[in-house]
Amino acid sequence: MNLHVTDFSAGDARDAAPDGFLKTREPRPHPIRRRAILAAHPEVKALIGHDPFTALVTACVVAGQIAIAATMGLLGLSYWWLAVLVAIFVGAFANHAMFVVIHDACHNAIFARPVWNKWVGILADLPNGAPTAMGFRYYHIKHHSHLGDYDYDADLPSHWEARTFGRSALGKAAWMFFFAPFQLARLGRLRATVPMWGRWTYVNAACVIAFDILMVALFGPNALVYLLASFWFSIGGLHPLGARWVQEHFTHDPAQETFDYYGPLNRLALNIGYHNEHHDFPDVPWRRLPALKRMAPEFYDHLKYHRSWTALLLKFIFDPSYTLYTRVDRSAANRPAEAAREG
Image (spheres, helix red, strand yellow):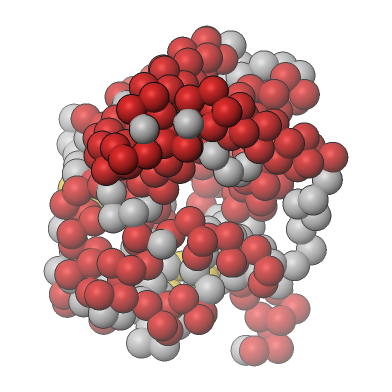
């Protein structure tokens, strides 16, 4: 197996525009590779489908988080520091796994009926303390269909983020720590998307808020401290798990804008590191993504990848060749008429 690990040097930064993203007019690579893989390996079709086992995993993890939160709550608010520590070392990994469940649910990769996937997503959202599942469901599909398009892809940092926080080590560290509100703030710039506020968004919010109230009423406020801390560190907070957002699409080379993580934390993160595989086949459930890589090695083994989220987090913060503009922007490719006028 010939695997290539990313080894970006400061010299690679020459490809990055000093005042903007890496521009490309090339189409999204993932639909092209999907068609090629299906042509070369029609047996891959057997991986496409649903995995109800994910619902069982969800129930177990949510139950575990409730048990830990209850314990923290019964200790009292004076033990808030213990709740935060346990959240960093345990709860963050549990909540991050639930984000992967929400992710699979938005692709309807758990059950055949979309409504059942929505309910599993809401169940996975309960330990977050804040409603995220339905908002993510609305906007994540646009991320796949408009990858790297500034006006449609909420995964791409806003210009004000990149200008304000994207170049210094301190700024990038602050951006990673406050990743959750930064991501939420991007939604206002997007256009032509399905409105986030619909019936299921309200159902999601009602369920999570009711869950929060119940946890505080039964176990005390420190239970909610634990859950909110678990949410915070599961997607940012300078936690190694937060490097996932850098790993997925930050790049110095427009020829490869999606990267995998093949490190040991994939076992706790439900294979979310298999990101090229997921973008190629979003309808393949998380448990089958390693099998997809094994079935089509000639399409994946030559791609660069990351082995450590911790190392990547440190590199992102301290390496000046990384900025928040170290991303591909294919807005011109998605708007041929505008591209022609620019030319």
